[in-house]
Amino acid sequence: MHPTEIRTSIFPSSAVELNTTSALANYVTEAGGVNLAEEFDILQIVGEGWFGKILLAEHRATDTEMVLKALPKPYVALRDFYREFHYGLHLGAHRNVITTYDVAFETAGFYVFSQEYAPLGDLTSNVSETGIGELHSKRVAKQLASALEHLHMRDLVHRDVKLDNILVFKSDFSRIKLCDFGETRREGTLVRRRNEWLPYSPPEVMLTNTDETYKAVTSHDVWQFGIVIFVCLTGCLPWQKASSDDPRYTRYLYWHNSTGVLMPVRRPKLFKLLTSKAQRLFRKLLEPKTEKRPAGLADLNKFLDDRWLTRTSLDRNTAPGGEDDGLCPSMYSFHSSLEEKNKLLFTLTQYGIETTVDRSAKKDRIRDWIQSSVIDEEEEDEEGNEEDEEKREREELEERRNRNRHGKVTVSSTPANTGSNSRSASQ
Image 1 (cartoon, one colour):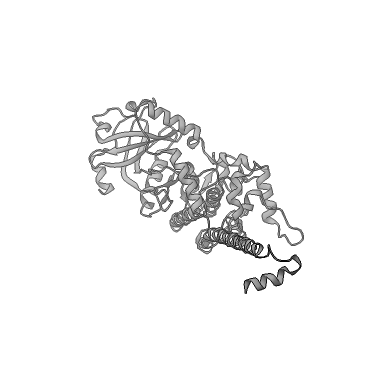
Image 2: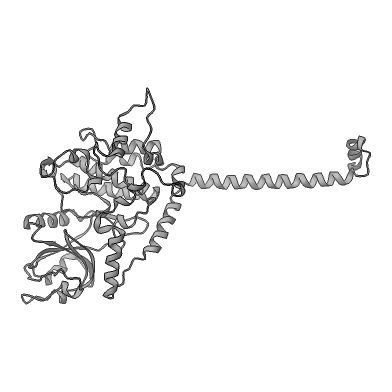
């Protein structure tokens, strides 16, 4: 069913209020002669916070499962709602951008539009404490770069590239999609700094005071892209914020700016997990000076055939804790943290709603993905070592047998003439 066919039964000015009570039944009420419950089956609350509500619903007439994104009127201007909805419709033709349906309407307290549903959630809920492995990180990188290039070719800057805004449609990460265009602006637009998610903010934004303006440029997306892929590879953020008062970022800055000619500079701990070629890639993506940072991601393909993770990085989950341990759980936002998700799951269970994602099984799958992404050369080396060991054992066994046979022949011989007696005996 084409998305535009869904819109025929939706009234843009329906006066339906989405209440703030926890009972699902109260999320949809009848008003103004239009009963939203007759149009949609509300299946569950996917997310809820200051940004509004995200409801998983099924359109009854077409049996289409979709997400209703409800933005609160007190915090979202109608102009901003139209902008996000328009960009969603305009950009959704790309295979790695979320599909926005031609369904939008207004309620007493919310502006609402609909999008396709991602059954496996966002990247935040799929990345483990050790990442998702090299193979899957490269898949994410290639698709995300393609989506961002799609925006940049249209002179748009996403400005909010993070794990929460990358949705997963296949468990092997062969299909991911970029979403949430609430912060998207045309390149060169002056935007006001608000409450950006600090770990993803580039240094030039961090230097801008709150409520002051800065110019939106595509190199901001390149920086955030680098942070996302770094987390996919390592499971950790490289730093809490790209600011001089963050010791981890300061160490990175010192390493990044050094030539290493006069004196070798110690690499930041997490960057030791990366190969020299991968380090070169991240030095480009995470270039502190915006004028030197690439404006796009066209060069990514040059690095996709290179190895990104060192072999020692595979064993780090068994190593004792270190200076970067505190960064690993901090990549979660408030509404996507494990504690908050468990609360949501408990609430949904109370109302008889079963989730479709087995989180324990998902974690096991992630570990399998990590193991499967190990470079084949390692497996071949291990197999070769095992074969060499077996060969040595066979040779030692054969040698012991020869010695035993040799001993039996020389038992009755004169000790001084053992060698000649053994030769004559063998003849």
